[in-house]
Image (tube, rainbow, N blue to C red; front, top):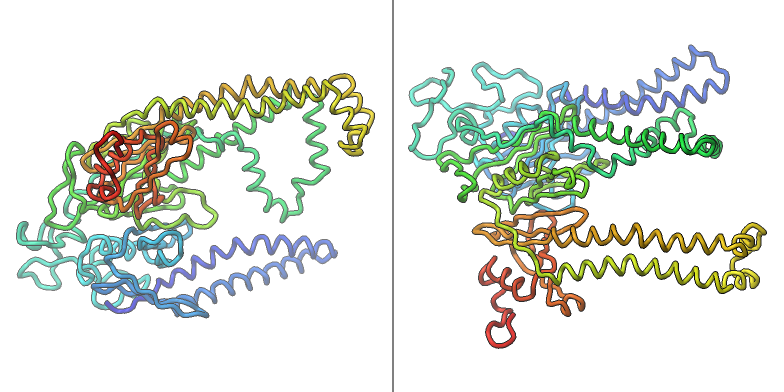
Length: 602
C-alpha cells in the first residue's frame, strides 16, 4: 500500500477550532482599546485583524503538518511519518495492535472526520498509542476492521492512494474499501450479496472485512430509564462549585471578579441575614445544579450507546451462550456520544477479564457499571475524567451482571464469603478510628476544666490572639470546654455509627471464587469492585501478610497481569484458603513455593 496523506478538509476544522482562541483575544483587545477611548470602528477593525491573524496562523501550521505527515498500512506493519520541526517515523507491528479508538467532536463530525488512536499494549506513555489526526470516517472504519481482523491489507484498500476528500470510484463500496469479486466476474461488475468463495472453501473476506456478512450481535443498547442512575454520584452535591469553576475563566476574561473580597462579603451578609431561609436555599440550588449537570453529562456521554460483538475471522465457529465457554476470536465495540462521538474496539483475545464497579451511592440505588480489563487501552485525553475502559453507563445491577458474563464468555464464578476474622478486623479498625479522636477531644476538655488552658494562656502559649478578652471569657465561662465536649460527642454519635456501617459493608463486599476460566475477586466498602480475571492472563502472584493479618490468620493474595490495573487483590482471605486458591488458579506457578502436609499446612 502506498503512502497516504491526511485529508485536506482538516484545514477547515482547524479554522473553525481556532475561533476558540479568537474570542478571548478579541475580548482583551476590546477592553484595552475601549479603556483608551478608541473609536468603536477602529476597535472593530483591530479585532478583525487579530482574528484573521490567529486563524491564518493556525491554518498555516496545519498546512505544514499535513504536508509532513504520511501513513501507510503494509501486510506486517502500520507506519506513520510526522513532525513539523522534529521528524518522526513510527512503525507498529500489526500483531501488537490491541485496540482502535475513534473519536470525533461536533466540528470534525460536521466535516466527516474522526481521530484514530491505535493502542499497542503499553502502560501510560505516549509511545503506546499511534494517532492519526484525522482520517475520513470511511478510511477510519476500514482501517479499524483490517487492524483487528488480521485480513490482508490489499483486501481492503485500493492499490492507488485515495485523495483525501475525493468521491469514491465507480462501483467502490460506500466504506471506501475494495470488495471481493465472485469467480468469473469482470473488474467492473458490482459484487452481489453473498458472492465470493463458497462457505467451507477456507478463510474468505466475503462482503467486507472480517466476515462482515456474519451478523453483529448487539449485547446492550441505551435505555433511557437508566438516566435515573446519573445523579447517584458525589458530584451531584457539588454542582454549584463545579459551575463556578467552569465559569471562572470566561468571567475573568470579561473582567468579572467572581472570588473577590467584596463579592465574598456580600454573599456572607446575605447568608447570615436570614440563615434559616438562605442556607436551605443554597443547599437546594447546589443539589439542583449538580443533578442537572449529571443528567446532561450522561446524555452527552452515553447518547446513542451500543455495545456490540463483531464476528471474528471467517471460518471461526459462532459464539456460544454464556453457560459455556465462547471462542475468543471476535471484537467488542462500544459506540456512544451525543455530540462527541466515541467508538472503542477491543480485540476479544486481548481481554483479560471484566470488572463490575459499584460506587456507594450507585450501589444504594441498585446500579453498577462494567469495565474492561484489557491490554492496550490508552489514557483519557488531557482535561477529561472519563474512564476509557468503561463498557457501559450506570445501569441496573442485574443487567451489569448479565453483560459482564457475556463479555467474559462464561458464567462468572460464585463468590465465597471470607472468614469472620476479616469482619472483626474491620470492626476493630472502625472502633479505633472513632475512639481515637473522641478520646483526644475528651482529654482536651478535661485539661481545660482543670485550668490547663487558662494557665497556658497566661504563659503566652496561645499567642496574642488568645489573650483577647473574648477568648479569655470563653475559657473562664466554660464555653470552650463545652465546644470540645460537643466535638467528642459528635464523633461518638456520628462518626462511630458511620464507621461501623462501612466496616460491615466492607466485610459483606469481600469475596472470591474460582471458575473454569476466571478468578473472581471482590472487595470495597465505598467503591465495591468485582473483578473476574482470566486465569490465562495471570503471570504472577504476590502474597502479603501484615502483623495484624498474621495474628488473625489472614493474608492478601494479589494476582499480577499485564492488563488493567496490573494487580488485583483477594483481600483478607484465610491463610490456607488463599494459598490454595492461587495454586489452583494457575497450576504450577505457585507450587514450588508451597509446603503441604504435616501439622502446618501452606
